[in-house]
Image 1: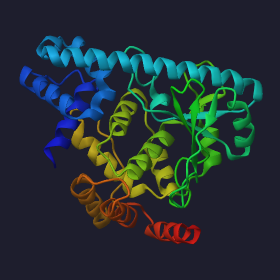
Image 2: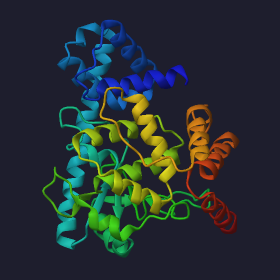
Image 3: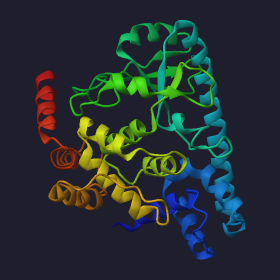
Image 4: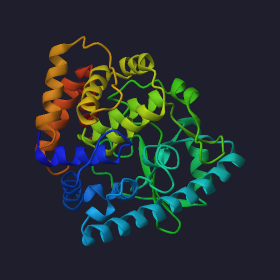
Length: 343
């Protein structure tokens, strides 16, 4: 495993709430070094600062790192609070219109999985809207935001999500009608909506979140789409597993339906490797051992190789993932057919 990835995973372990693990000054110095080098970890600055102060580690950070942590954490706290205000305003409109939505990813976890004092930074707001409600939703949402008009460069652009910008130009909102590319996964959406629950922070039944097991399956597909399994979502799943009682049978059932049973098994293994001392997550029995081992090899050795988005190597990674990691490689072949057919 690349040293940079192992260092990022150490940061994930540091901000997870494992009280048994002892962090000495040398280990904390390495956390500081990783934070300063890996700019993507700025999204965890409020969590790092929170854990450092609770563990009396803050004085171990250099003055420069202390200043950067406080500044970045403050930015994340203010930004998340502003996004929460926008979501509350949207919720009031949705209550009047009778339209439910499901908050996804970062803003679904803030003020629930992550506290108000130590939120996880997010770049945008992700919302799932039922296809039958999308036209009505867009008319309602126009009072708060406007759709971002972009030139379609690729065949699947706008297939399952469109980006909006808030009226104050401060926030981007990705409005989904599907969780991911519908050609790649068989997600039974009716059950997903039925199992959704109100977000605990908003006291509004129209602002919902996925059930725990559905959330885990969604995060796994999201990591696959990003070609990055050493992602914040690994931390999200670890914290979900600690704060919620996970029904592994339900995850296995969902994963088989979605076509990601092998992928979920690999994710459980990464969890067990990363969060040492945490409660073990047991995936389904490894029924396809060869596919499982190939998948683990690709995730640990091919995917971490840096590349530009949409580059030849990026496309090669996508092909390998969908042919060898997901349960049915033929779905990817069918998606390729649709891609070239629509160009």
